[in-house]
Every structure is written in C-alpha cells, then in structure tokens.
Length: 318
Ligand SMILES: [Zn+2]
Image (tube, rainbow, N blue to C red; front, side, top):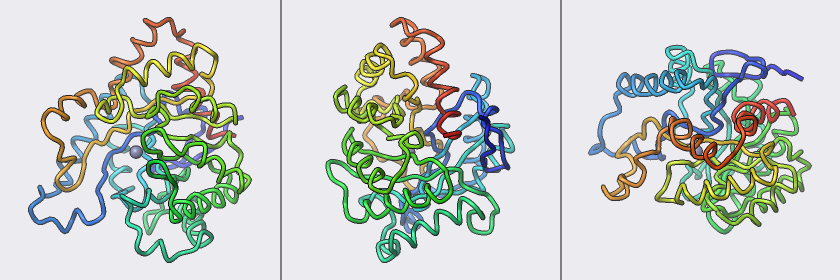
C-alpha cells in the first residue's frame, strides 16, 4: 500500500517515486577538506549548476527520484540537495547515518553510545536535520573491507534501533563485496526486518554464492556502482546481475552508480589512466549503456521495471 515518505522538498506518496536511482551523490567531502588551502575553492553556484544539469539530464531519461545516501559526516548538505531538487524538478531523498571508520569523521561519535547515536538518527528522521526542517527518509550504515570495527558495529546497531523505532528502511555501504552477511547478522540480532534492508555495493563481488547467501535471507542487494571500473569491472557486475536475474532474483536488486556530482577539496586525485577507466561513472550510464546490455542478454523489460520502479517503492512501503 502507498505510504507517504520525506523528500528534501516535502513529502511524496511512494506510488509517485517512479524510476528511482537508489544510490547517487550530489556533494561529498572527506572531513578536513576545508583545511586544505591549496585545494580548489568550492564555488557553490558552479557546483549547483553542475548538479542541476545532471539531474535535468536524468529527468529527460525518465528518472523521477534520486536517493543521495550521503552520511552525516562526509559533507552531507541537505540545503544544497533541496535547492537542486527545486531547480531540476527531481525528487531527492536524503539519509541520516555515519560512514565507515576509515573514511568517516569519528572522533566525537566514538564517544557516543549506540543508543545516543540512534536518538540522533530518530531526530533527523522525525524532526529534521539541524535547523533546516528537512527530514531524512532512511538510515545509512557502512563497513570497511573484510572486517567490521567496533565503531562500525555500534553505528549498525544504532541504525537498526532507529529503524525499528521509526519504521524506516536502512541502506548500507560495503567495500569490495565483503561483510554484507555480517551486516545482516548484526541487523538480525537487533530484530530488523530484512525487507527494509539494502546491502549496498554488493556488485563489488562477482561471487554468486556471496550474493545468494544474502538474497536467501530476504534483503535487497545494491548493484549500485556501475561505472566504477577501477574498483570492479562493469562486465563482472553485469555478468553477476544477468545470472541473478536469470534465476529470478529481480525483486531483490536495485541499480545505481554511486556517482558524485561534486567532490569537495582536491577530488579523487586519481592518475589519468584510472580516470580513463571511470569515464562512464555518471548517473546516466545505466540508461545509456547497462540497460541495453541487459536487453541484449534477453532480460525482459518487466524485470528492468521491477528493479528500477517496483523495488524502490516496495522497500519504502515494507
Ligand atoms: Zn555512496
């Protein structure tokens, strides 16, 4: 049944979400970027123009909703998101949550308990973020490669508790296709319903046993880093996706790119040969290059629609 959820510019009925990109970013900045006087100055107007152009291009491709799961501690700017939504006509959804330990801004939050962090999340979901009045619609949680730190486990538990209290879903970050099942174990111990969980960046592994181990427990998987070929090649993401769709998992997969319209500070700082590898890392890539490849592989239109429209809706309605 349709449900009303928050966007950065007001509420929306889930039956109006339409084609939804479940993991893209407008602005990202690692803690401390503003201390770098040698970095390019952040020009808000230029960044806004870039973001709005990107969103308008997506609108032209039929995208209705853009979910930006930027955690609170890596440059989340919900006022920027709201302005971009207003100017482009895109529905934008934001999250509350904290990033993984190695790239997050952790000093203060390490001293807080899981319940204190959960209270912060609940406030941002129900009352709003700072003085903006803008409310988050879901919770972000994150882990690094191959193990979950004590801090990350605390944040996962906080996410679980806030989700249970408010009924909102959770979306996660994983590194290199690891720790997804362990994230589920922590959520399970807190009593979270897996119908409200996306294990993000699961396309970082091409191991189908890794994928089915999680899918069999009822969660969603994010195949949400298309275009990030230097982390894991698109052809492996595609091969896994086509395989999983072939055996009927289309109701549990969402597609996205984890693109970033503007990176604060010096940007990614990657050498030119790596930049060449990510030339397709834009939020239009799925529509221009990936969906045609799925069709070529015989994936029916209805399964594509399930991933792009029905799954985001069902996830928010669960
Ligand atoms: Zn992301």
